Image 1 (cartoon, rainbow, N blue to C red):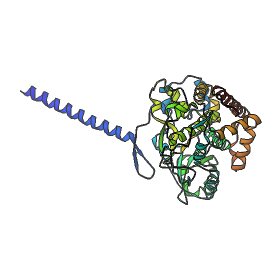
Image 2: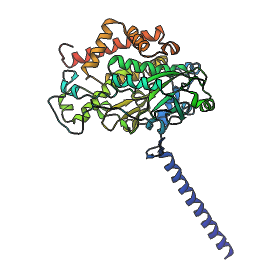
Image 3: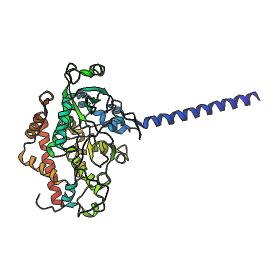
Image 4: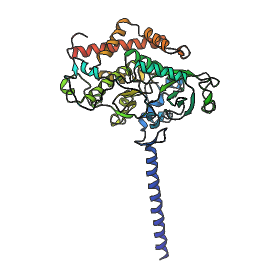
Length: 427
């Protein structure tokens, strides 16, 4: 009897331990999916998947190590050096924009065919949202340069970035790059988008860290704790909140034949869906030209080990309640993107080749840059005229400026190919 009693007690003890472990694991899973915003509110969502961190890890690899990576990536090895970007940084943006140009797009009102040749129809262009107008951007830059920063706290992705609160209570994400490439890529991508007339990127300014200046004096102790280098150039981007994640639309997934200007394929979509697809076509153009691998291209790469990656939210892409897409965290573009271009080019080409319908106004700017062959000059002029600290941060090397022009030319040829394929007359 004593043996039976001892066995029963042992069994009861094991069951109790198993129950405790089960409850603990459920709590851990719950906490992992709990995304806390800087305002103290919470959002329940999926935990970050490891595949997404694989690509963001490339941004944290020093240049010397990148040269040894070649064209082969080991997801398990790279995950260990991820840049600590989780759900928190993707959610913590604040919008204070008067989007009068953003129409209410929930009603499937149709004014005719959604396409004209290889272009979105004019009636859709008239409804197209201007997420951050030049007037708004200019006003925001002036305020951001003129106000003191009174607080720095986590909330903008990796731990080296900070959410800044200004003296007027507005906010911005401060990007302190692991190296200058990241701040330069973020900044020059913003001005490249401006050159193309793409308004989905939040306004941005550069600032130089100086704890003795009026702008930074209030956060002197915090800067010291972050171990930010004095005189480093950082970028400040308008913080936008109340955003939701965006899943790649069906026409742009690998199993689809692509986004084509066929009326029978697009005719059953609502106005909201068409306007979102229009913004996607601008995004694909921008990411191709800047060679930004940290968005749709990274998802395409992930398919080799994650067949459902396209069904989850896309990196660095969010949506406002009105339906405007916001292109955030563009640090992989241009400088760094060009340095690792051999690694990613086949995926960039695949994404570009999946699209054969465009905004006419964006294409007109691409054609002009192709014909004049002056992309470097025009981008540099816009950058210098808009940003007083441009000489401190620097610009594209001659080699990278040449890569940008060659990608403009390649994009132009792709548009001509689409024109011939779909019998479009007179671009």
